[in-house]
Image (cartoon, rainbow, N blue to C red; front, side, top):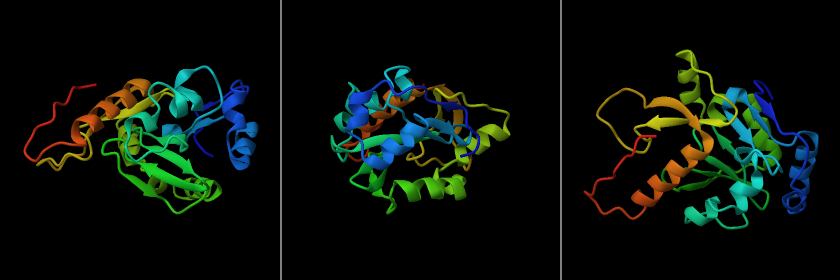
Length: 199
């Protein structure tokens, strides 16, 4: 992988590690998670700290994705995320993509190995890195514990031809904001407005 900003240290969460499929265990033994492509992909590790890198927090913690998003199952493993906080989940051997604004879940029709291969070969498309590239072209740098906050959200149509403005924020804050936004819009009657709290 290119553009590595962070690699996880020692395996300190052996309980979560024991529950993972063997191919993910093999990957995490070599490097216990990674932030690569200059923030375009974050693969979580089996660690207790830092919380933003902890697979257990994302999978079974208070703000676990299955607790918020209707389509996500408790057994889905949220092993990675992109630069804006969309999630990559393992369900069986399939990699699923969770749009964290809308809660839509899509089967990427690849397994873990081919997901990594696609990310390596076509990172811009496979990882939806356009917002990060635009941010970097403006001189921005994403830290390992950060995600990009997009305003307005991608799912909201605007009359402007401009792309959403991106700014770096703490990953935990961004994911909490996305969860709140999703809860507001998932049962929204036609014509009702959403309150967009800036992040």
